[in-house]
Amino acid sequence: MTDERLAHAGFANEHQFNWRNLRLCILVSSAACACGYMLSIIGSVLGIPGFQVHMGILDPVTGTPTPNAAGLTGAITGTFYAGSCCGLIWGSFVMDKWGRKAGLINAAILASIGTIGVTAANGAPMFIVFRFFCGAGSNAFLGVTGVFTTEISPPAMRGLFVGMVGGGILTGYSIASLMGVAFFHVKDNVDAQWRAPLGLAMVFIAFVLLILPLLPESPRWLLMQGRNAEAKDIVLNIHKDTKSNSQTFAEHEFYQMQQQIELDKQLSTSWAEMFRRPSLRKRAMIAMTFGFFNQSTGILVIGSYGTLIYRSLGFDTNAVLCFQAGWIMTGVPFNFLGAWLSDRWGRKPMFILGLLGCAFSLALEAGLVATWVTPEELQHPNKVALGWAVAAL
Image 1: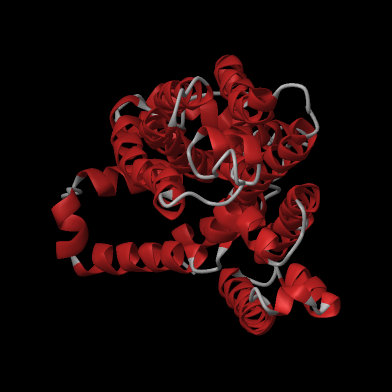
Image 2: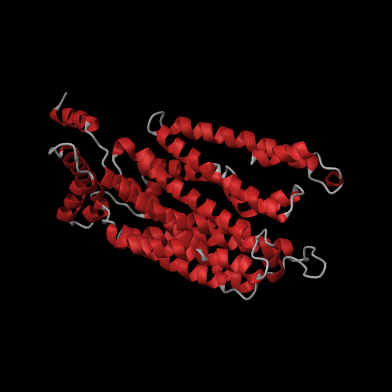
């Protein structure tokens, strides 16, 4: 073996875990709670009759959907995802130009504008406009947390550490669902039933801003800016081996980063080049394919319209909100299990296993809903089948 390959073999066997690195990844991943909360809260809010009346989705006299109900519901959810796309692209530009911490600040500003706007909304038009900013801020958080944790986590534990971003998202989802249940029972103030859960997103946004002084800048970004000394100090600090005086792993990690950045600087890295150069194009297509299949699991549809789905199964508002909370909380332990297993079984087996599980569950759900969810059948519902429809989700 060459000296370089011998060094790499030693590098791979080095002790890579330390508590400081874990704490930093947890703190960065906590920003994903803001993303998850803003993504999920609309699923609970859409199930609250007071919100539906205020937005013109439900007729206050008859209690039936208005002629514009479907269009308003689609606009409320659709503008969020339009904002998500724009926020992710803009956030990528910000964190490449000004750093990963600047990316968090950018996301917090966008999310704050959106959260304040939807909480104070006096009607559907205002709500829809500010939902765009909620989406932009939410996915700007998602983009920067994924990149940030990847760049500071050790290679041998990257699956688990980066998987914490998913844990943060699901924690935000869970809290949003629980807040939907809790504020539904504020019977003496109909507006508070939906304004308070929406406004609570500011707690997560404020937390992100408060932890910023505790976070180092990404050493990879610092290397791209030519700030090598700062980058090395951070790498030696976050990858410090507390069990010995040896810093072999940290030194090798910095050397690898530095060599990769030097190579990258010699290449054209424009957006056009990403699709022109075969090696970059292949990686871009793989990344986009992963993103496509992640959304094909049905997670966003159930997250946004879950309460409407449960209601179509014949359940009342309280049960609907509880089911929505239970649905997402089921994912929290399995997210961490999947992240842990991805470092042991590999990414591809876990990805295939997850997609197959989702495909089976969605097929079961579709069959049950197609068979039993009709106005005629709900007069004499098959409660066992409806229960399985809830379980499938």
